[in-house]
Length: 162
Image 1 (spheres, rainbow, N blue to C red):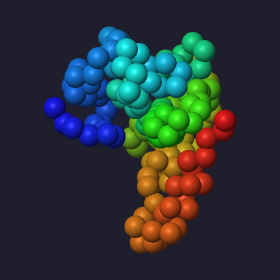
Image 2: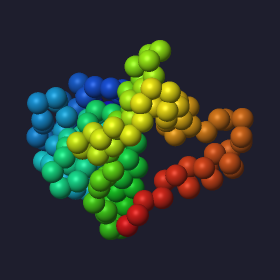
Image 3: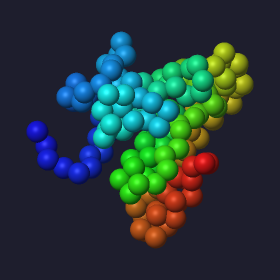
């Protein structure tokens, strides 16, 4: 047992086996089922996000084990966990926009949007999109820019519509 008030656990592309120590309901991938506020169903003091959470992105589509869902799930879960600790109102997670971008090596990449995966960019345009996603959108800011600029960047990117 780890005695603590707050824990943030980031484990990668699979649901961590540590989730088995949390009382609750699980999906077929071992992810904890969560409510709209990302609180674990059956464990009132625990919020889950990323690859450990089985959440609905909208009214019918479950999230996938992907960075695009994990990043937003983390933002909402962090927001709600903090608000829960200080007695403030929680907000429901919702991520209606869905896209995929798959790098296919020398051929290029495929970029799609929507749950029906409508093709938007292929080959070189798709590859450029994939590189922008990987090299700009999902990477944290460089330590070389300094603490003040890093916190400013995080504050701007962490705004959640309520």
